[in-house]
Image (cartoon, rainbow, N blue to C red; front, side):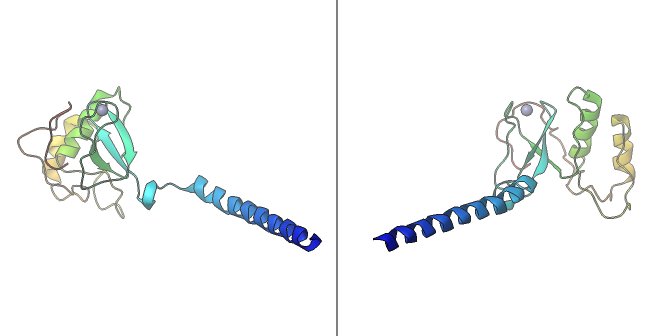
Length: 156
Ligand SMILES: [Zn+2]
């Protein structure tokens, strides 16, 4: 009888040690993680209606919607730095660059001229640097980007 009791004690001690070890191993990894579910990288997506940026995992199969106003979210790229939402001029510039096919990724070296700082410079910039390394998407022709919730739109 006594033997069984002490075995149980040993088992219990081993279980507690294992638990402690698990906790110790898990905590730092979780705190450092910059990834979302499933190990996907998060990419800045902009709502041009709210002038807000959201970090979400890109889902090519599905159009993402703004959690605030449910307008379409646009994938801006990992290096996108959202201007303050009150800065209409900067958001206008960012939207114009997006519409021209620019995405905000960091690229190797500095072989491309820096993006324009003012909306008024965008048209000339797009004309002068059609092969800019950050211009990775085709320019949108015709329909401008809608800043309002729009019915289903094909593609991003
Ligand atoms: Zn929104």
